[in-house]
Length: 451
Image 1 (tube, rainbow, N blue to C red):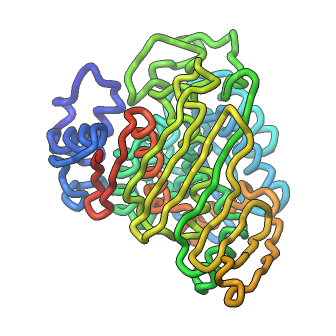
Image 2 (image 1 turned 90 degrees about the vertical axis):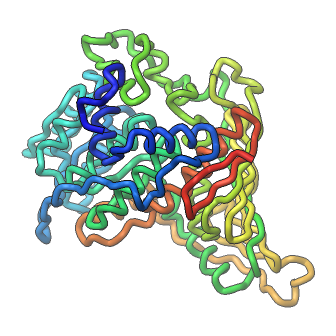
Image 3 (image 1 turned 135 degrees about the vertical axis):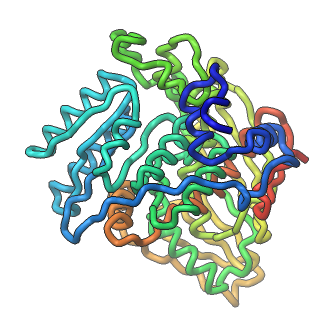
């Protein structure tokens, strides 16, 4: 497919992305996307056969030179990142400069610009309204942090990688699994670049200690685990995001650009401010909350690829929210392990975080890693509490690790493989929630099938 063959009703980004990614066989690409939506993927071209664009050469970084970074998305999370990176510089923990920011909302962009300039005296910071493409076209950035809504993650990340920059990508890595698979192809095709997903709880020492305990054979084979992310509110989850009465489409918000790859819809400030409540733009509890706690469990257990996912729940309290307010998920892995997840925005009492082995159990509810034997193995497994260091702000640790990747070219912990495994769980659980079925995933073919 060439650019003249694109659909004129599509957002320009959709047509451009298809061209750049080299998914030239329209039927093959459509077959993959469509089959991902419905389950089986009989027409998808094998991953290895789909050509992927090569990135521009990355900008060299001399020892001691400040890392020049850009930020795409300056809402609450993006602006918090700006403040945090500036604070790391003030603390003498890194030498980094935020030199470019972009957003579709002028008030948010101007607020972030003011803060970046105040916190970085003497640093020229440029703001780009309405499009990330101008920011990436500069060619003088070492890294780009992406804190845009989920439905833009894949496009922003791929564009940044192809521009030759390393990427810090907020979680969830993408909105849908097919996007995660395409992003993975780009990362694997450009091994000189680094992509880190923003799942900062993977830095907590207790999960790494648990991995050591499991590797030592102390608890025997880990057979199943459980964790949760539960909270409560009187007015409905994510309704605390304020709606600015001064927002005006076409005046200080580029709403069409915000809608982007998912297609235009009528301007709606409620959707713009609280998009996590809506099925089209977010997976809700699953992608926004549970990703935080299930990802570090992968670090501890190393269970391999998810193979089967089923989820249940519903709209029990917050019936105005389109996404569910109660989610319960069962995930099976190819190593022979089952993970149970619970998520709620209607009750704050969750499950105890723990890993259950044949010979013993690991409790991870507090800062430390606690090991207790199964009753029949009380004489074989010693009860122990492994004291774990207080690392402070785990998100700052995550930010610093990304900067270390940029400087040293070490691979990130929260890498594309981990992120793709998480997206298998997120996407299949989301499908299961909406249609009531169970889903199977084959990591060899990267294909999904409804059971």
